[in-house]
Image 1 (spheres, rainbow, N blue to C red):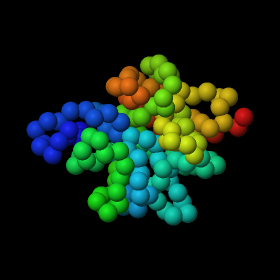
Image 2 (image 1 turned 90 degrees about the vertical axis):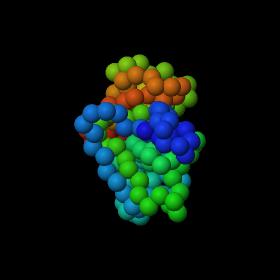
Image 3 (image 1 turned 120 degrees about the vertical axis):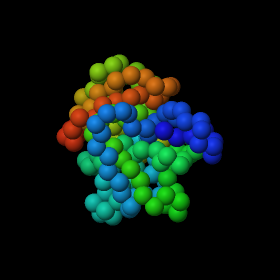
Image 4 (image 1 turned 45 degrees about the vertical axis):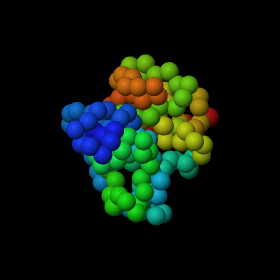
Length: 164
């Protein structure tokens, strides 16, 4: 839960990047890309041994959804390596994610990751086997939280690449 101001008496949901209640698998990393985006899927970059933004790489290894640091103000959307020594990402469980604009998820529909080098990279999309820029996950949409933000459930590490 993040805060709208620096006063810690106003906790409320701020959207993407919040873990849901329940049994979640959350990892941390102290090596990550400057500008890592909160509430989006990230990849493990074995070349640099870091967690990085999804950017259209061929067959990336999806690490999970980048979680918002509790000390971040609501309008902060990216990590600064000079301020935050570590980040956390959710690999399994319930999490709120940013959804690509124009997508129309329905509860329990399959989640994929938008794997392109555009401004929507790393956002959740509704799985379509005919779209090459998607990585299908073992995940499902649960419910809308806000405009372009959905609660999803990730239930495994298996991923499938579309070849169109």
